Image (cartoon, rainbow, N blue to C red; front, side, top):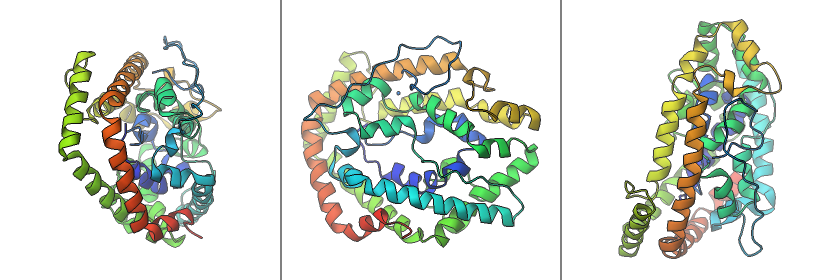
Length: 368
């Protein structure tokens, strides 16, 4: 919940930067919650306001609270977060770059005989976007960790993307070939944030990023992410943080969560359980005949109750549990960890921003 968002940012450049393509593959609708949650808070349970209606019982919606005047929006609550949120400059550059990448993907896919739709749509979902407006507590109150509670808005956006209709107009063999052409042979959508896979092996997404000048900024981001992880790990090895995490563990146990000894453990548990719920969707989607797939994904919204393989009751139950867990977690974090961890984090983030100034500036002008 408090960890860095470097991995999410990298995934944004690779996946969200080409959202209209990656979003259509069955696995994204299937594992929408795995589009994670940033580390800045996430890596959710009332479904988001834009979730489609369903016959299943849903938890009561929580009305978002505006950020307190003296409390920053969650996305800008650390030095690095504030850097990327400043003046909306980074998001503007990323939106413009995303469109260029999609246009390159269209050409690449067409050269190999496949249709692809350029949308220019943003790569974030409604849950992530709320981090730009809400404080951490207000956001957590509505979305928890942003894991299972992201499923509705992400699945909705992905399933109504025009590439979903293209993909599900095909039979299984052609669908597989379309996907491999897009993301690379042997790759999975979950691999998009894996910097170990060279862009040259990432299909039309990778080739378009290279051709549009994204290779350098992405390499710089990966180097920055490695340095960030090393500095953060060093913080967690200090005596003060070991004591703070121990106190957090005791606090969590006292409020009914005795199994967590690491700060990321509650989120990991939610994510693992979401994976179990969403696992049957992929094979169920793959088994659809072209006409069935088009009927499911052709329209302004998708009814999750009709999404094959999804146990909607189990999803709603997990969403409700995620919200309760995340609020308890935040209370214990505020009581025992925040005052120890965040000054140390802010210090090393500022140092890294100075050390990687050129790389960060390149990200804000990516592709230009």
